[in-house]
Amino acid sequence: MISLTKEIPPRSDDIKVVTLGCRLNTYESEVMKGLAKDAGMSQVVIINTCAVTGNAERQSRQAVRRAKKENPNAAIFVTGCSVQLNPEVYEKMPGVTRILGNHDKLQAASFAKEQTEKVLVTDIAEVTETAHHLIQGFDHHARAFLQIQNGCNHRCTFCTIPHARGPNRSVPVAEIVRQIQTLVDQGCQEVVFTGVDITDYGGDLPGAPRLGSLVRRVLNNVPGLPRLRLSSLDPSEVDEELFELFAHPRLMPHLHVSLQAGDDMILKRMKRRHLRGDAISFCARAKEIRPDVVLGADLIAGFPTETDEMFQNTLACIEACDLTYLHIFPFSPRPGTPAARMPQLPSALIQERAKVMREVGEARLADFLKTQEGRFCKVLVEEGARGHTEHYAPVFFTDPEEVAGLVGKIVDVQVVKSHAKTLEVVKVARE
Image (cartoon, rainbow, N blue to C red; front, side, top):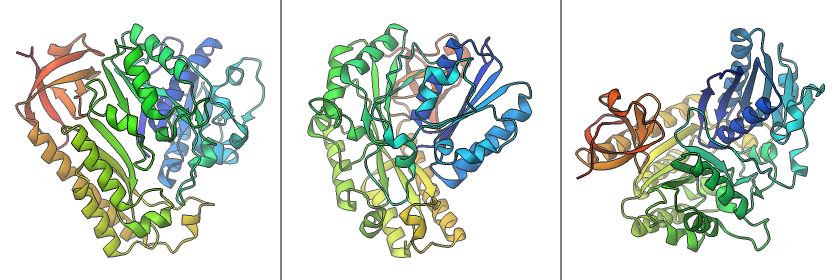
């Protein structure tokens, strides 16, 4: 449930992509940009929507209206999870040229000039394979997000994503290795594994390889890849081989946990596959294997029936798990989900609890960043004289000239000062 919004600026061929939602959407946006370019398109805006919360859907609709206003002569293609769930909403919006479901948006035929259908939304539950798309490189990104699986076989009571993404479908190991080698050959320094439920990877493939097996194959077979990151992990699904690999120096010491809550009753009502103690044990074991690991988590504030005591249990769990990066989502009832039929909390209480959790997260992040002052670390340089450390701590360079021309490179730095949400650094040579 990592939420973000990015716009890929137009290139010479005037293909613009607006991405809302998760890292998987970021990957798929690159695929669509390539498909549109191969089809000879120009003057087109592709909006990749999100449906993880009601607010995400509102932002998706706003993005469509804004795109048409700012690009009156462009074709507007709308796709993504919100479209998959509610295509009729976007079909009625003025100015929309084509509506593509989550399967259809990755098909070359959807972008062909001879395609005349306005609405292409395949039943995602019938899709049995994840298409293998080879991306040569990510424009305007210092790292690459790589899809290793799609879909989800679980049914958390608050979530519509399985209906938007379909069942778990994994990309074969050999194909992933090939794609990463291609990215490395193009100069990529960091790859982030992404998907809907990456810890469920491989169960649908011959031999049922687990995520740990995939990670080991990548690290062994692509020695030129300096950095590998994992996106959100379900603590109930992490296999033993992956635990062993947490200590590998090229697997970055930053793990994000799909926690959602820290109270057992709420976790049961969410139909999660772990309890509070399981999450605490997972985090403790990760730190035992990799003492410098920094942990983050997704948390939902104000889930139906959550009492003050249950909320306090979640706050205490943040401390018990030693979490640093918190992604807080105020509960938003999704139509058709079991949680939407449960007794709801007042909106003001939900927002207040989310505010408290964000403040806790901000304080914990500031405390962690303070510990980095004076330390040497390696930073992957991004546009705007910014970047991230091995622990995914955001940094900015005091002197942008120091890193001019180094976007996409890893440089040695010493942290000068910490701020509330970022680190200040100067490029130096490690002694």
